[in-house]
Image 1 (cartoon, rainbow, N blue to C red):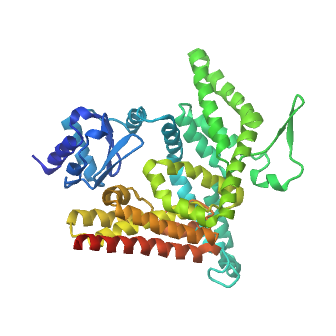
Image 2: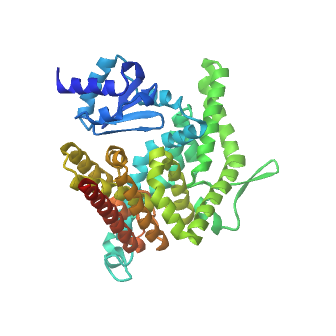
Length: 467
């Protein structure tokens, strides 16, 4: 029997046997499983399997970290042993969602909408970081930007800014595609809906507060403001839900021969009227209220906001609730030009990486050293799950010390007013998304996130071993 098959069999047994496994698939590094009863999992036995680098449960799914490349081979043997058949990620999500309460389902829905568009948003954030370096004053020259001194670079910076801004300017189009797909409608109609909300004929949302004479439509005596929703999240989210439900309603009642002619036009017309007359104005007000709420907290109690969000962000990751704050970040960027929440995310990831790195240095266990070293690097580059679930939560104290370091760093950068102009890579490269004037304070916070969790974890590990 090969080592791969032997390990796959051990994993099945540690998970409570094949009768406890409802469905199984895998991603780049992990087995993703829907289990009938997670209480039957023998976590200690699972951790002792050589090929297993960690395990955790989130959003009703039980995930076993194997590693890139090897996970494919383990999965093939796993399927052969259990006889469950090959499932898709959607099958696993559907099976897992049956165990969730309404709040968890709502959080999962937001995650399912935003995760597919994250690569575009993060890429845009990185490119905007490059633009910030070229256009920010006091980086290379005193009170001048790089392009102020080197005028021949100005057009290059302009092109980079255009490429970077596209994902944010047409953000409703991206959200519309993902949201309508999630709600069961036609993704193409979601794209059209999102782009409709930022049509050039509408007043740009970023100019709304600067204009006294707002253009309107007159619908039989009812004035409707011709305002776009650039950078807005709530209007397109709610409109996408209605679009999907209207489309599904019509498809059930209109004959197949007439669906092409009637379903899409009626769906877009009805949703469009609802979006501009009801949904848009209401959600625009709600979005602004949410922004004002967070801004007022951090304006008046910056240190407290930094302590709570910086310290407890990693707990949001454990519960999966961190995805809900992506919408808040995007709303803050749209309304105020920057977000004070995302910089704390970047430092929280770094803190988790530092705690894992301390375990790498302190441990003599070769398997733990390998896992801790690779997961620390991953966390420094913005992917914290291997460090958190494979190392820090497993031993508890590294996770707690990472939270302490992140909380201190959060207080420092929020008191200093650090903001990010975009969402980028949530780790050490995250400084590219920070507004250039805040780099100094952010680097101080980064230093705290690097040093404090490492020292606390390393010293505690040494003291624990000496007892």
